[in-house]
Amino acid sequence: MNKKGVKWLYQELPELVGKGILSQEASRKIKEYYGEVKSASSTAVALIICGTIGALLIGLGIILLLAHNWEHLSRLTRGILSFAPLVIGQALALWVLLKRPGSGAFKEGSAAFLCLMVGASIALVSQTYNIPGDTGTFVLTWMLLIAPLVYLMEASLPAAVYLVGITVWGGSNFEYPLKAVLFWPLAAVVIPHFIWSLRREIYALRSAILSLVMFVCFSIAAVFSLGRSWANSWIIIFPSLYAVLYLVGQLKIGGFTTNWQRPLRLLGSLGLFIIAFQFTFLYVWEFDAGNYALSGRSVLDVRSLPDNIITLAIIVIAMLLFYDNVKRRNVIVSLFGALPLLAIFAYLAGSGRGQEYLPRLIFNIYLFVLSVSQIMGGIRKTSLPALNTGMLMLALLIITRFFDSDIGFVLKGLVFIIIGIGFLSVNVAFVRRGGGAR
Amino acid sequence: MNRRLIIGLFLCVALAQVGVPLSMILRRELVLTQGAYFKFETAPVDPYDAFRGRYVALAIKEDNVPAITDARLSQGQRVFALIGLDGRGFAKLTSAVTARPRGKDYIQARVRYVSEGKLYLDLPIDRYYMEEGAAPMAETVYREHVSRDKQDAYAAVRVKDGFPVIAGLYVGGQKIEDAVRQKATPPKALYNKQQAP
Image 1 (cartoon, chains in turn red, green):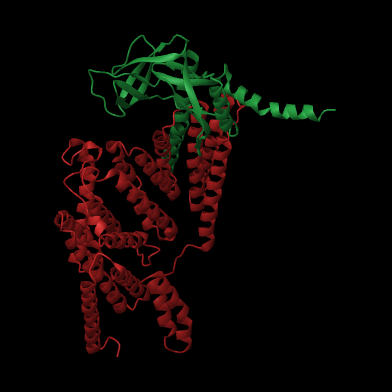
Image 2 (image 1 turned 90 degrees about the vertical axis):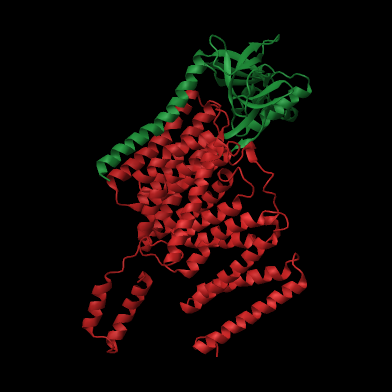
């Protein structure tokens, strides 16, 4: 049972008792059964948010002040200045660890501040000694120095900063795929923290922010580090990546119920839908798989091996999670999770010239089935958001196909009529079962 | 986790956080005091770095050497460029080798590309940080010098064991900071004179 429901029930209890529907005894027993509703107090959340934003702003301000590059400062003064903010940040964090180990706000804020001060320190040294403009190395050094804070201070902001930082580093190594692919092992460092934050219900906000950052960083990283040696690899990689995120979001970690508390599920399904929607367009399938090798590497090259291993791992995880959901007969979840499988099939079948119609047909049908099942699911659970989402998905598909200039009018017209008839027959079936519109 | 352990680990991390910038400083101070002195002819232009401040980008004029014929080089590969002097006393990269040279002055650099028998290098002398307002003016100062056919901008660099550290940037024989300051003051002085009775 979710927290909201219990809260509502508790509000109703006095009235139910007053009207004699429930006895005092029953009301007490209900309360005993569900226990106390724990929720993060809004002051605690406000403290964390304000504390973190304040610490971030001060940290960024210090970085800007140092970036002015005060000319008349001697190298010695600059040396001292390089360490002063850093040591202050460390002292603050240490004080929090010693005196306020239980305070999320203090930990989050001081860790965020220290993160920035580490960067400020390295930046000022770079400035003083005119260190070459290798952004990647600068950022990586910085990130490796702050990564332990994620665990020592149990803070999510350093984790988010770290993820963004290693994405920048990986991106700056776009031309060196062997380095760029190291993004994934580096990113794995924060995964245990992410799972930990998911388990701690009271911090729904921070796991949501972390999920969002993770989603964006992983998407960018997939572009610069995965499938670099084969044509249009994104057709398989992105569905697999988003399917993994989506299906992991479905796993029962703690007792989450809302989308806000399960950001991966929301973001993953959004990603999957957008990708599937892309797949219904012609341009995706107009590629020549034969003539392609980025960075002069072929798929079988040894240097492509790390890239291929991680790609394969993501695909396999997506498949396993998909299989698990099929086994448990989660229809809608499995439908979303089926995208990688379809993508692989379409990729293999549709890569030849003149074959482009096949993948487009597959994904139009797929999206149609997906949105209709979403609508059905919404009706069955009497969930208006789910119903509306399904309707929106379907509307988008219909509108796009209506204006699609690649398909002949006659064919389009016929398909629209057939689908319309299909809908009416479903409605009729519903009426017979006594559930539809009368 | 045990609280003592956390504090202990935190102190280790803090030590590393201090140690990294400290080692960066020490290494460069060592080069600045003990390294060999060279003047690299350069052209300063003005970009921006949000984190580290404003700088002038340095385009070293002699950034190529005759290509190495007996080795296949890939982009980004580490090579060692030997430094000699040209007739005017400026540094000139004479050749590049793949093994670390002994007893000679050299700079560790990366291969950018090879073209027409020349090997172009990414030298680790590519930016010179200046005060916020000074960097754009430094570019103007340099351009004025170029237009007067006085292309005498150079970066003073100290080099030790292949590791270069920029000691200063000079235009027209004076430090760029001084040249910028001079450029910033004269119009004001002129204005004051005209106003004087």
